[in-house]
Amino acid sequence: MTIPALRRRMGVPDRGALSLEAMILFPVLILVLLLVVAFGRIQASGNAVDTAARNAARAASLERDAGAARTAGTDDARAGLRDQGLSCTAVSVDITTDGFDAPLGTAATTTATVSCTVRLSDIGMPGMPGSKTLTSSFTSSIDSYRQRD
Image 1 (cartoon, rainbow, N blue to C red):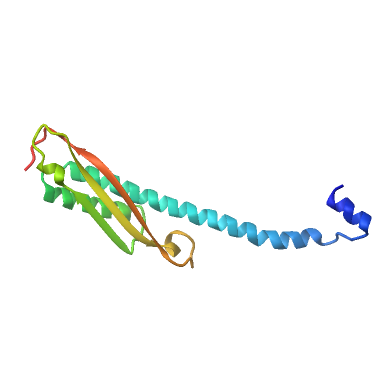
Image 2 (spheres, rainbow, N blue to C red):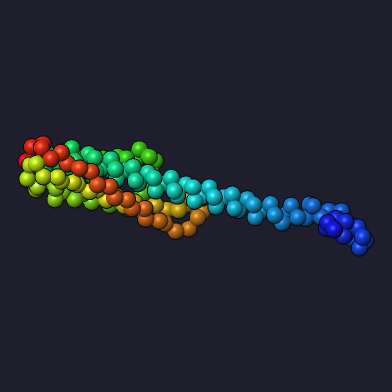
C-alpha cells in the first residue's frame, strides 16, 4: 500500500504535504550542490598547482646551470599560478638541481615542488573558513648530452 493511499484510508488529509516536504528538502539539496561546486573548485585549484610544477620542472631542465634552472623554474611556477588565476597567500617553489652536477652522458633529472596556500573562501565558496595548502611535484629529464656549465 502506498503512503497516499494509507493516508486516505486513515482519514489524514495530505493537503500541503508536498509543500512541506519541498520546504524541508530544498535547502538540503542546495547545500549538497554548493558543496559539490566547492570541492570541484578545490580540485581545479590542485590541477593549477600540478600544471605550475610541471612547467617549472620543464623550464628548469632546459637551462644549462643550476642557478639559471632555479630562477627559470621559480619564475615559471609563479607565472603559471598567476595565469591560472590562483591567488596564493603563500607560495613555495623548490627546484632540485643535483642533476646539473652529473657528468655528460649520464641520465639526470630536476624536480620542481610547488606549494600554494589558498583561502577556502577564494576557491571554495565565499565565506568558507580556513585555508588549504596544495602541493605538487614533477620531475623532468635533463638532456644527457647537452653541455652544462
